Amino acid sequence: MTDRYFSDEPLEESPATLRGKEAHHLLHVMRAKVGTEIIVFDGRGGEWWAEVTKLSRTEVELALRKHRHVERELTVEFTLAVALPKGDRQRWLVEKAAELGVTRLVPLTTARSMASTAEPAAKLARYVIEASKQCGRNRLMEITKPQAWGELVSQDLGANKFVAHPGGVGVGELQRVINAATFLAIGPEGGFTDDEISLAREAGWQIVGLGTRILRIETAALALVAQLTA
Image (cartoon, rainbow, N blue to C red; front, side, top):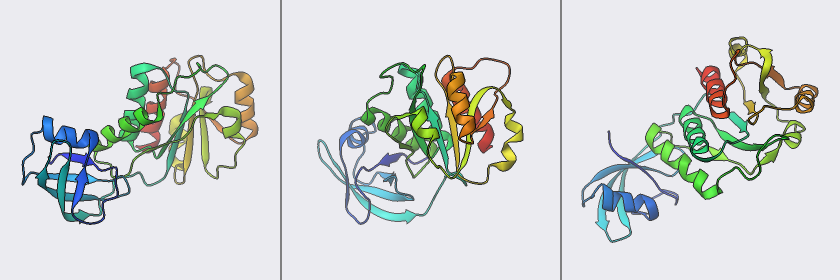
C-alpha cells in the first residue's frame, strides 16, 4: 500500500510542499528520495498521487500527478457527543471514532464530568490526522469546542438524537431508522444524572441501552457507533 500523507495547505496545483511532522516523517523515517511516490490529501475530499521532486532538511516538494475523487465517508453524518476520558483512553477514542467514520466529535461537559479532561485542540487534531492516514479517509473528522449538556440538548439539531443510558431501547431497534443525520451522546464515568436524562427526554432525545454490563466511556461510544453504522 502506498504511504499516505496529510497536507495542511490546500492541494490545488503542482508543485505542493509538505512541511512539519509530515515532511519530517517522509524525510527522516521513510528516507524518501526524488522519485518516491506517495498519496497526499488535504482533508477536503479526494486524494492525489504524487511524486517527490525536491528534498531539503525540513521540506518535501511534490509533483501532483493524478487526483482521485475517492471518498470513504458514511452515507449519513454522525456526530458523537462524548464526555472524554483522560490520557491514552482519550486518544484511543478519538482515533477509533475517526476510523469508524464519525463526522464530528463534540467534547461534552456534564454534571459528573471531570474538569479539563480534553487534550489541547492541536493534539486532538493530530490524532484525527494520524487515524485518517491509516484508514484511508480523505475528509477529517471535525472536533468542536467543548459543549455543556444543557446547551446541546436545547438546540434544534434536525437529526436523530440518541443518548446512551441504562434501560433504554436496544440498539437493534434503532438501526432501521438511521437514514438521516444522527447525534449520539455518551456520558461520563458514573453516567448522566436523572435530571440530565429528563432534560434529554423533554428535548426529544431517545434513550438507548447497551446491555446489562457497565461499559467504559470509550467502549460505550465506539460500540454504539459501530452497531449503528454497520
